[in-house]
Amino acid sequence: MSNAEAAGTAAIAAAYFLKPPIHKALAKLDLAPDPDPVAHDVRTVAFLDALGLDPIDALGAEAVTAAAAWTPDTTWVPFRDRLRTPGRLVAPAIA
Image (cartoon, rainbow, N blue to C red):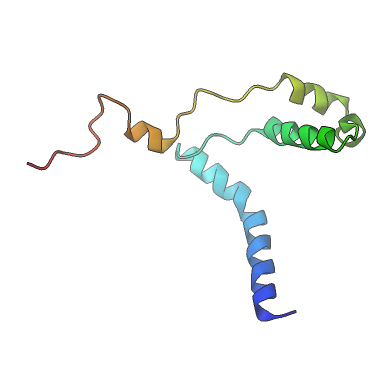
């Protein structure tokens, strides 16, 4: 294994293990939406359906039912959109 491959593997592993705590920290700062555990199952069910596999065998009937009834959270507004909200002072005007 070359140094580049080892560095790439280490970066992927670090991202895999650090993403959940970083996402939770950003959610506490209101810079990211709260982690949604059902959203992962929704993507998994869609993936398994696309492959023609039965998602109930892999995830269980309860998870598939929750994924089918899931709707995305529309109350959270991304930070970049909050800055563009009309009526809010984004930055003082320079004359």
